[in-house]
Image (tube, rainbow, N blue to C red; front, side, top):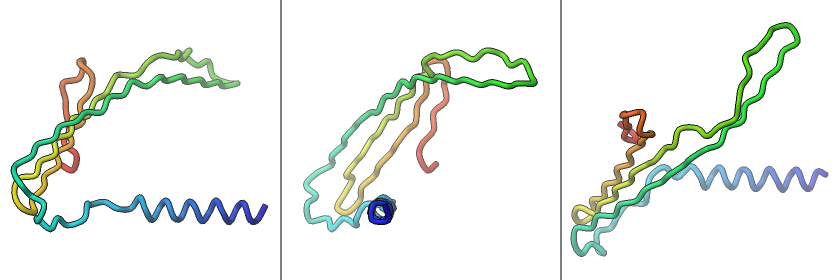
Length: 104
């Protein structure tokens, strides 16, 4: 049991160290040829099932349903030698007309 616990802790620590990479490595600029624009998107539609109970209070019934769909728009540019821009925009469903830019 101790070996399994030690193994799980070692894997967890290794994964935490790897996941703390917030920025990409510095570009050397030698591979830059021309302006490049890459676009991408992420989509999600989540199913939510909530349940609650209480012995002393009458609670309203909760149901299960699909949450609002969400989408992310990603634009990544190589502007010049050593200059890279990554713009990530968080979008919501058609009922919400708000959007957020990551980090801003």
